[in-house]
Length: 151
Image (cartoon, rainbow, N blue to C red; front, side, top):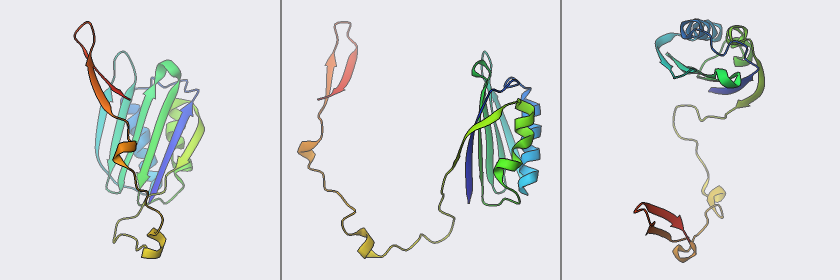
């Protein structure tokens, strides 16, 4: 399982046409060896978009913030014929930005849950006394709006 997250900054074209973003996403999927199943484009006002490419192997998402020259790319797949960092190059070319942060998120692959010996569980649980937790209180303000706080 591969789950790679990319923060792309300095995007000179973060306001690229959403269909062009989707085309670059399909190219990225092809570079990964993945098959496209569906797509969703959700534009925001006054600008920005989130594009979702649903793959037979999971998904790719791109969200843009043109006002900040920022985009976030999320690649989640159980298959990759190439590195996601290399596969997203069509998106980087389109958005005209550079990756400033990458995070690879470890994911448990599908199948039987991993077996954990009971000896590894000993001492891993913490007991919390209910009396040690903060109390939730609700109070009405002078304008009649309820406020919730912890004490």
